[in-house]
Image (cartoon, rainbow over all chains, first blue to last red):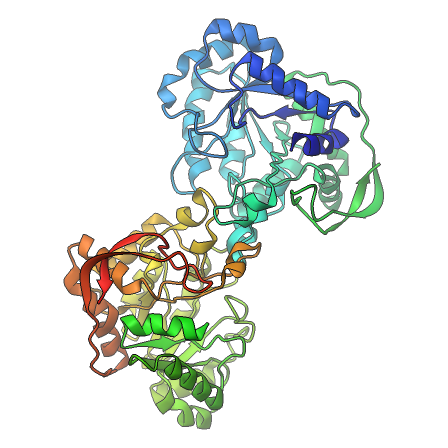
Length: 310
Length: 310
């Protein structure tokens, strides 16, 4: 799978934050190094910097000191909340020491922020927990991943140490697209798409150039049999179309000038990154998104897009 | 399909209201007669009264007079709101004359009550339209089919001429079961299951013996390929398990004595029916729900149930 998808991301981006929720969680430096090596080998034709993350668990200060130059941050999953997160956190009161060390060492905390409540409320409910951390650790950089609600946008505004990412698909779809007419497994992901008004809030923030809300694709490839059978896996594969579709989106809003900011500059500022110079060119040339990449159906399969990667 | 499913319903019930949203809408007496004949032939081994409905469209008074002894009511679908409802109503201001005739002739109006708004709001929004009809036609018996929300329950309470049906599955599942963990096409139906609090309100009403809320299975068989592919058809097939599962449900609530009321007596009172004497016996004998009936997966496939049809 990596052989197929890594070049898709490398074709569009100078680098990306790599999430650690593999089947075997990436919670040690050897695992991290091995995964990074695989990614680099899969992209050998095209420069791509994998910004690695560790899978959150209680870490000693020594472990964190040893890891900090190898990672962009540590990704926290509530246990069972999403794909391959069974080893995540169940007791949120037990992690303060680790968070304290991270704050001290300036290691960012990335979060899949959902409670185990009613599906439409999970993100809002989890903000209460994030709020406690944001207040207790005001120097800890917290990134709320793939936000989907107006509540989350409002929350980001309240805390200087909190950033967020938003996906391509959450700027476009709502729950209506997932279950409103027919059930659409290829639009099913976590957090699930919410109300149209939530999507509007996300778009408003992004198209105003909100300086703490960065693009994060959460591109999640699943083979067809994981999508088409009952109990379909959550996740939308957007990597091959992310940049072209974002370009259309921003252009339609008359905000094409914000694209670079959204897909790169904000993140560089928020994370203190200086990625290598890499130029991605988009040209106004129509192309039709393939039905499949290998055995994986991409977001927008069969659609004709206005912008191509050169 | 009818050959397979009709006996399932006939095994559990003396009769059932037959919905008219076939591929070719049942909107004429010849179509109605033909469909009824097919149903009776499919149940020939077991008595089952199909209470027929016509598909709502503007009908003249003459048509209604000609039809009234052949139907239990007329079923209204907003255009496109559910399976095979493309011929439904788009302009709700255009139907007053038909409703007025129905009121005069005492022909009940059955409704799939959903707007084309956000999926979680459709039922609540449509109540506003039903309210207008309930007030304008106080002698028209209106039955809101397969209600799923606390709002609908509260609404029923306000109008003497309004009844409702509720399905088996909406007493058991919420949106969490459909999309909260994995996507479950076999639990996808319309109206979609809502919040746990909505389910609680339905259960509370049913287990208190609410005298205007009747059981209506909305049992909807779809072959596997319509469920398992992308764009999966809406509908849950409960006919073979409806009575056994309802028995468990009511028994668990300590309300087994309400089962007869819920599955038969309320409806007979509300519709003024005197169905033929037919005895269905349930015995306390475990059985395992098959994975498939023909090519159709039933609700609760693979589950062991406590009550069997004798």
